[in-house]
Length: 293
Image 1: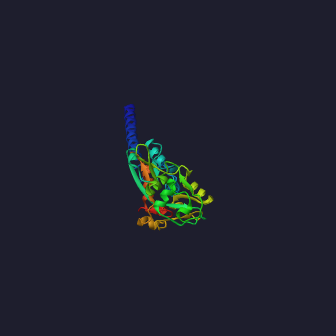
Image 2: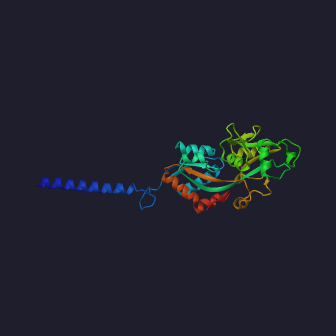
Image 3: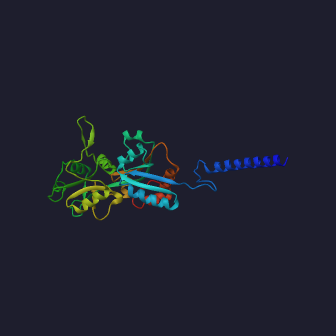
């Protein structure tokens, strides 16, 4: 009888242990990732953002602030241009793709969602020694298509214009050429980028700014957020580029900053997106760009 009692006691203890273990397991795997309940695990993991080099510095600032309060989440920010932002989502190698232009119609099938995080103007800039201060959209178009090649044709000195542009696939270039109508047609009659082949091509906003700053008689275009006194910003149609003139619509060369994503967004990536659109995130946006909230 003693042996039977001992055996029954051992079986009962084992059953209680299994029940307790199952209950603990259920608490640790909640759908909120443990981020919202007492005793749950904090969100963790890595969020990869790839795409526009214009958005990249802003993404890095947002990532740093986000990581200060979400230490278990690592946010990796990569460049490559807006086209790469779409491709990274298509190839599922990034959580968020960064674009500094609108999503093209043919790209919409490659992504599941887009979130506008900021707005920005594209400043047309010249070397500080340039005597021209104002251009029309038509003059800008003709300079970039190669129809106007000398500053004297737009009221400046008799000097050849050195055209500086971004690389193909750049969101800044895409927005600039579309708004200013720097377009031509291919053999099939389709509109394509019409930038002169004589232009100096640079791979980032910073490289364009540095080239214009150091090259006499040059003209380029950069994000309004990157504007400083190393270059001179031109008025366009009589309107200076600024946050106020972009929001009012008076300054015509402007574009959105967008994060795109695929069908599945990880809890960590969603937490980062929520932070970007929060008051704290938009306050960071407002330091150099135009907030959307």
